[in-house]
Image 1: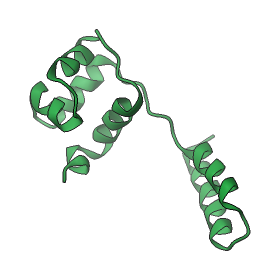
Image 2: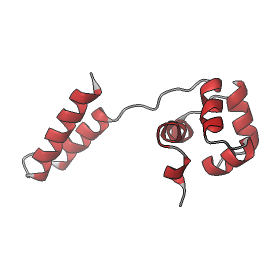
Image 3: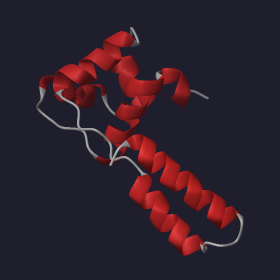
Image 4: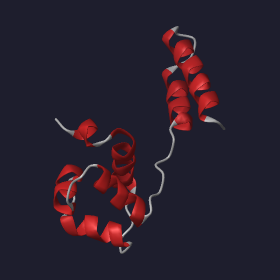
Length: 102
């Protein structure tokens, strides 16, 4: 389903919830259905994100709260990021590191 349609459906559901017509459990189900999964990233894409930010592997590791060796392994394909790390890489790719700084 296209993101425009999902966005419109989610907005409609939120309005129904805000008006008291839709219960919270149903709204949570809509939230889950409309949440885009984190896109898997290749080692090259991960390196490209880091280089776009003009930082070293150790500094990138500090931002993402992982070890420098983890960044190196992601960029060489020895390890594949998943879960929270993958979601965070997606956020940084689209919004930059400023989004996760205090």
